[in-house]
Image (cartoon, rainbow, N blue to C red):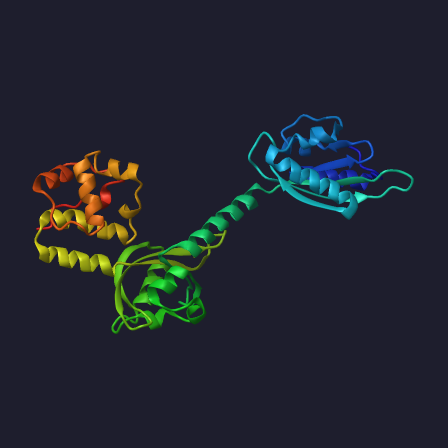
Length: 334
């Protein structure tokens, strides 16, 4: 393609951009024509070797992105600059169009710019948004720490479980949460992370702001940059105090059937898999489509059942294990 005022230097620049995978576009606003370099045409998955109409150019974008692309192009005619991201019709990758409007004395304006594949950055942005949503909404405590143990992140789940606000914890260490005799435990966990070990479902105890000692299950993962350098650690903590107390109480109860099923419900509430959040369809599947088992599970969850009929218990125990019913299945604890 030929750009206004093209020189040998511009031609060299064009070849360099093509070698880098960057396309060039030119919009003749007066003629309503868009010209694409071979690389730009390739990014748009089209074979436009000749200038195409403006509407044909818009049609190369996915339908839901066309209005945004059209608005950015038309607004650029007045603002002199263009910056818009969109997806080509034939793929789900993201392209970024950047450019500038040029005023021509005695004639209509034109615009020229580059087209860049920004899919990787967009996908990273999407993943970051997902991680941010999980961090903000999770009922579990999610805590970020440096390799020196300094807290960098503290979500609402951590505030609810431990009683300290983010303002109180960020910039400090986890020391205030450690019960007597466990002062070195956090440093030992970080050392395991440094060695590349995975810390999964490590049960320990922590002290809340009100002084209560609670049981928690910890999972700790390394946080690394794009080059794989270790930056710190991310910890997920779940309060399993209620589950452990329920287990102890039920073991004392001596009712094997209730231990097997109610213990599963208590542990599922601790976060491994929430049977309490199953839909009606999923509960039926978890109960093997046995209405008696399903009713017993519902009554146990509501705290309205003290004993399980032995015949129902036997049918529940005989169910094949699946992902849905795993929280409700335990071997004989006696």
